[in-house]
Amino acid sequence: MRIETHGQQIEVTAALRDYVESKLARLQRHYDQPFDVRTQLSLDKPDHRAEATLNLAGRTLHCDAAAVDMYAAIDLLADKLDRLLMKHKSKLVDHHRGESLARNGEIGEIG
Image 1 (tube, one colour):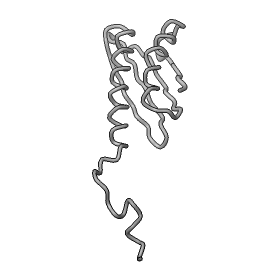
Image 2 (tube, helix red, strand yellow; image 1 turned 60 degrees about the vertical axis):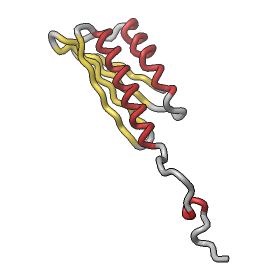
Image 3 (cartoon, helix red, strand yellow; image 1 turned 90 degrees about the vertical axis):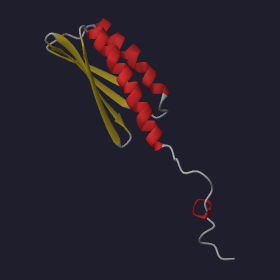
Image 4 (tube, one colour; image 1 turned 135 degrees about the horizontal axis):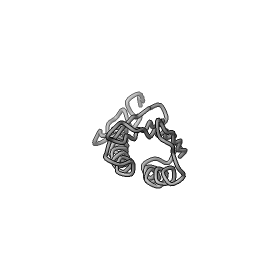
């Protein structure tokens, strides 16, 4: 997982960058394939805003959060991204139950 952190109207310090990376590191447990996360931290007075864009294989997911301070906004963003990834992953699972002839490959065989 590659995380890029940018700031708009705010300087991204090493402490903020490390905090973002530590919070978003838990997202990797949902997917084995590598994916990119681009985060943008901004100041939207009086709130602080954190936005993230995830680039998965064939999908782009976006999420944002606002809070009183930047660390709280990053916490909210990490929670929202976690829920978004779990929802996306559940959509990828095959929900068809039971066996069918077409799935077993027996429908086209005569014999």
